[in-house]
Image (tube, rainbow, N blue to C red; front, top):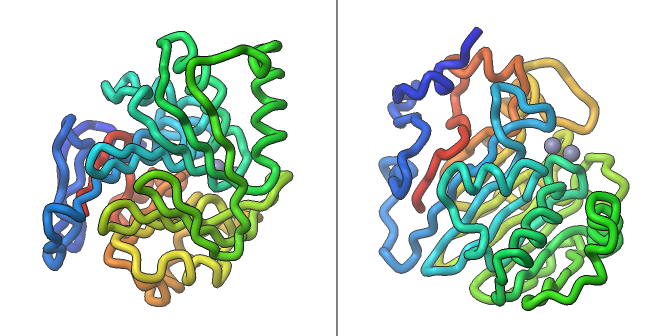
Length: 285
Ligand SMILES: [Zn+2]
Ligand SMILES: [Zn+2]
């Protein structure tokens, strides 16, 4: 079955919100109660909203936050550089990359982002904030993909910050990130993250089974993006939509958006009670 959003047509969800792959530069209001001053507007764009396996032809996880000229990627899956260029987004704008965990569909695009910067003569520093182990895993994956790439002298610095997973704030530029450890095996701690940029707050589950850490991460957020890999089939270390729906009232967010959807979710988009991410979807705070 072809999922309705893949046709490119817009439609309203059961709560009357508009769904559509967003045209470049267009932002949707979050909901009817969303009235924020201009200074706090942050654009949240799903550069990639897919699972690890390209379900529905979607790009792997990459969510771009932009506010007042500061640009952050939350996760950078292996397809993310291609996704950015397909959506006419400049990889050279990216100031920081926040990684929830060290699976290829969430951080495998970083070597390409770094090498693209090298070959485009980037000078702007890049900060990578990820779980403990990010320094070693990024080094290993760069050497595996492009031997010698870690010893090249570049015009820009890549600073890696390893997050503690216990909620401490870490600031870089205009961005403040907090992280909480979740339940997902990836050879390093997996994190849910909350990112503040300007006056807006974005939170994201990463990949995880249900855990109370999601309640903490989502608290007070303008948007909480949560994985919903399957519709109602339990899958170890992941969330199914039925479980998420049971806990939705515990999530103190202004808007819950589901992403990282596999085939069973993509075939039931019309049955969802929450906003479903799609590649190119942009939300404004
Ligand atoms: Zn994933
Ligand atoms: Zn994962």
